[in-house]
Length: 307
Image (cartoon, rainbow, N blue to C red; front, side, top):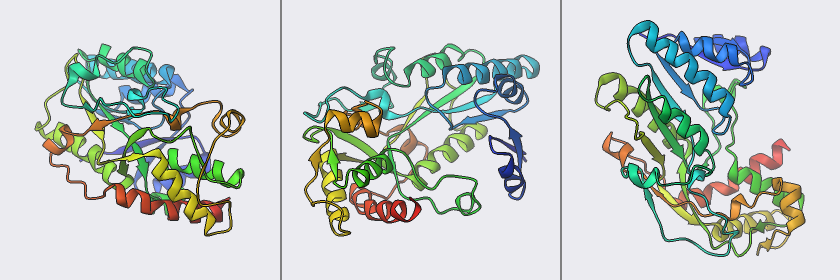
């Protein structure tokens, strides 16, 4: 039986974690000594907070290596990256043809070192002789979470990509799209991608999932694919029905991109992936792209109430 600890920044959330049987660790990803110490004290570390914080990742890896040295066993590290590592700079003008398969490690390791998230992924691969690391790469996560941790105010209800698009469109009073919206992205339901973490954890502990190697162990979180123009059109109809703008989305201007997305054309990029390995472990997602597009209405309703 494992005891569970969780890093939490807000002191007021500590008793909430304790109420569900979790030991709170007060700190942030900038508290490197805390990260190192706690990773060194645990058999399993699951990192879901930030795919791009290389100093935090190095602190965790340092602690994991200490754990390996002290126990003589490789600790398990489950890290969250993302299919953004596959992104290009299409700016909504086209879709690329390549579909990456997580069973093809050579294909993934052919990605450039400068790709999004890749510096952290590579640091993990470099530590593979001392730790057992599996990298999970979710795609566009959708669905408003309603589990107990959300109800208690511990976890967030929303993901990132679609809520960012919704909030930008509400702010400009018109649904928007990057370029022509011809780019493609994969998608996955929030509850179903969580099942991958459970599978990787349980199958690692049982021995069903082989330890990682220096080539890496990747799991894409994918069960559908969408064109971004379809997302923006669905959002446009949803907002228009509530008196916000016209149904047909308009192209974000360069100024819009700066204002709402920090100058990033990320929502105009392509990312195409196939999730083979989680299915080999028994993952059976049921939600499809149709469910994803239908979920946008709830995202809009929830965000309008919250904001």
